[in-house]
Amino acid sequence: MPVTRLADLIDPAQCPCLVIKVGSSLLVGPQGLRRDWIAGLVDEIAVYRARGQNIIIVSSGAIALGAARLGLDKGGRGSLADAQAAASVGQIALSGLWAELLERHGHTAAQLLLTLDDLEDRRRYLNATATLGRLRDAGAVPVINENDSVATHEIRFGDNDRLAARVAQAVQASAVLLLSDVDGLFDRDPADPAAKLVREVRGISAEIKAMASGSSGSGLGSGGMTSKLQAAEIAEMAGVALAIVNGNHDTPIARALVSDTGTLFLPTEGRRRRDAARKAWLGGRMKLKGDLVIDAGAARALQSGSSLLAAGIAAVNGAFNRGDPVGIVNADGGVLAHGLSEYDSGECALLMGRQSADHEALLGYAPRSAVVHRNQLVLK
Image (tube, rainbow, N blue to C red; front, side, top):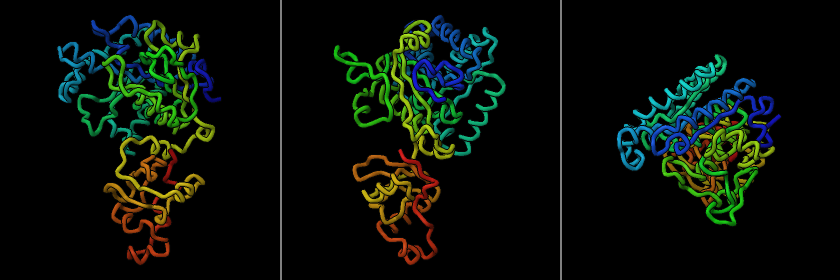
């Protein structure tokens, strides 16, 4: 049975595997690590583990903690060099504390530091998935963070919300729980007295996106509500539920679930069938090599399950090779799908708008059946 309400997140029958992401502002305060709060959260996690639930922790906080210890301003985010240095100092203390507190309950912690490329490159993605699976089978609790000490702007997730969703996708978790400094998604600025908590969302529409703010309220983290909605989109692609709840309390998970306070993003019915693993990986990719702009007729054909043919392509953006991931977008730039191109960008530009009967003469060899085959394409 799938997750359909917040309380299902701690039910091992409904949610056999839960990814819990903890934000920087919850882990690190003005005096450093909030040790007592983290210990209370680990106590909660130990209870869920005892019930038979697999738990994966995605932990922020290394940069904020390292910046405090090194005396760096702007929370260690004044420059890339500051962030990398702060992370290398903070990660030792952070992972050590998780290991110590989990060990009190007889659980072994395992640290994984990932960059964007580790989950964007197919081979490395499969390696990470295999490692997480083996740790699960061995009974360890993975504690994951972005590898901020080596990640550059080009290979960063940018926040752990999206990292958590990609991890959930990789291990085929049932749900992601984002512990944040807000109760969830509000229909307008939470500072507005008229703001109302949105308790359930099915599908990330333009209206839902308009409710989000792109900044982190604490100033410690790198994410905001916009990144959480992006994480929800990635989770939905794999048929995974995602919840946002307020972690600014003792035993935050129990409090949120007992009071039923938070926002639960549920996959649409079509997503509940789950895309094949390769399609889920493709749909959740954040780095694409280029875009294929298509006309309205091609867009309708994709929605009906067809492959993308050259006749429906109106423009080609970027430089890519055969087999590279590309975005398929409409004339307004809206992303309709991700896919693996059967042609390089130069060939796509040559073929765009042309009928299949013309392709062999244009290319000088027998053409492939489609520019992006439906088996290598996933709708957004």
